[in-house]
Amino acid sequence: DVPEQASEVPPLGFAVAQLAGVYILAENRDGLVIVDMHAAHERTTYEKLKKSHDDRDLVRQPLLVPETIAVAENEADLVEQSSQDLEVLGLSVDRAGPTTLVVREVPALLKDSDVESLLRDLLSDVGEAGSSSRLEDASDEFLATMACHHSVRANRRLSLADMHALLRELDRMEFFVYETQELVKAKH
Image (cartoon, rainbow, N blue to C red):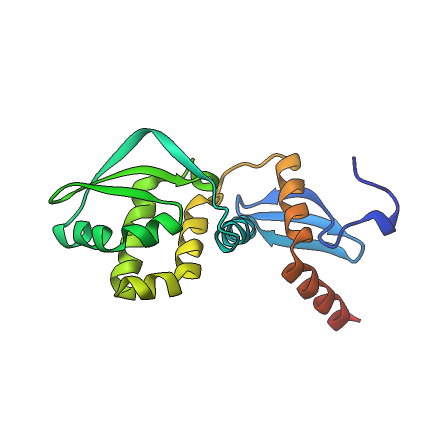
């Protein structure tokens, strides 16, 4: 159901196909547009997480079966030291032993993510950030890590409806509309 009038065509246009399992091919008023679907989904997820985090309105999803993860003792120590900061990011993680962590809640937007990989990457980032005060300062980086883990991967087949929905989400984002307008101006 693509509108025929040019004035109704959104900046990114309408999805036509998926290319090489990685890109969305779309058509807008100016021609063809190629969008990296992982980058696009990661950006939209990040923006949602950031808005929820900034509004202190991050919805958490309790895990039906809490996930137990074996870690090094220094990583378990790190979780104990940073537990409040992780809570602010929407993660409820408890220490269940010297080298055992239990993840009980994740941000609702990430409920289908690989929880263990997500936690391991966050622990790596927390280890690099150092103290828990730096953890709060680095929250954008942590939100970006979480968004990346949740984003569509290469070779995942998307329906035209899914591709259209992703393009519309990008169109609604202020940063993207501005960049698109600047790119269009540069072409003329």
